[in-house]
Amino acid sequence: MRLKTPPLPLVSNAPDMLLSDEGYSALIPIDQITSEAEAFIPAFTCGTISLDSFLKESALDMHRDYLSRTSLLFHEAFDGLVGYVTLANDSIPLTVVEISHMALNYNCTLPTFPAVKICRLAVNARLQNQQIGRRILDLVTGAIVDSATAARFLITDAIDQPRVVKFYEDYGFTRSIWAADKHGKDRKHKGVATVKMIKDIYGEE
Ligand SMILES: CC(C)(COP(=O)(O)OP(=O)(O)OC[C@H]1O[C@@H](n2cnc3c(N)ncnc32)[C@H](O)[C@@H]1OP(=O)(O)O)[C@@H](O)C(=O)NCCC(=O)NCCS
Image (cartoon, rainbow, N blue to C red; front, top):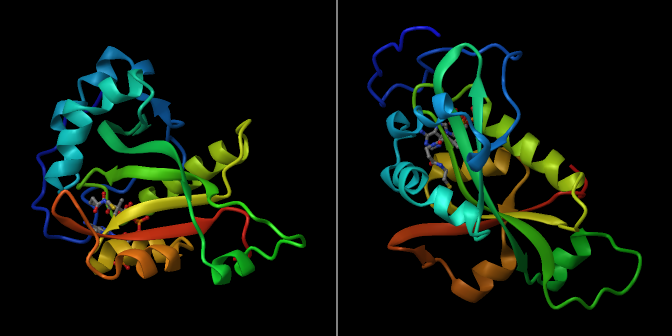
């Protein structure tokens, strides 16, 4: 194990440390990590207090009670938690336009469409901006595709900040037309403005 380096100020966009492509763990469920890895959790910060405190205070309890599932990412060259993601099953209504984007060749009358919700996604503040968030979404997508149940969409209530929205748009998410029609622009979750975004996992890029 290497010695921890002191945290850098969170204002810089450049990562404090670049991690090699090799050396990442799989996504590990929070109830399956070693006690050594568990000891990294209290020091984790992504720069957003609510995401840090969810991980430290609620993630394991909710995971054990099957209310959401939290998985963690590590890297062999980094003595800390690289990032985490929390998922839950969900479903979402679509507008006629959104259904037409799916290009189904039959008439589908589902009132809502099966989805996996990204409830929380966070990357260590020292490691942001080196495609780790994108890597976590790739791992999530792979797990959904391999799963025994159907989910057509990834959905999230993204914090309504340009950089966060852009991060999801760069990955192929779009703003949910259905949610925009229903809630307008005043959507809030626990006082934080959010924007519901969706991605058709099996859609054309
Ligand atoms: C948003 C986040 C998960 C992206 O992960 P990442 O590994 O940094 O992102 P990637 O390297 O794959 O992609 C880079 C893009 O992420 C976004 N991003 C990077 N750092 C960010 C930060 N501190 N806050 C918000 N968005 C950020 C930007 O869109 C960036 O693109 P840009 O450099 O052109 O502006 C991560 O930055 C993070 O944990 N931010 C703080 C918590 C948060 O806002 N989570 C999202 C909750 S909805």
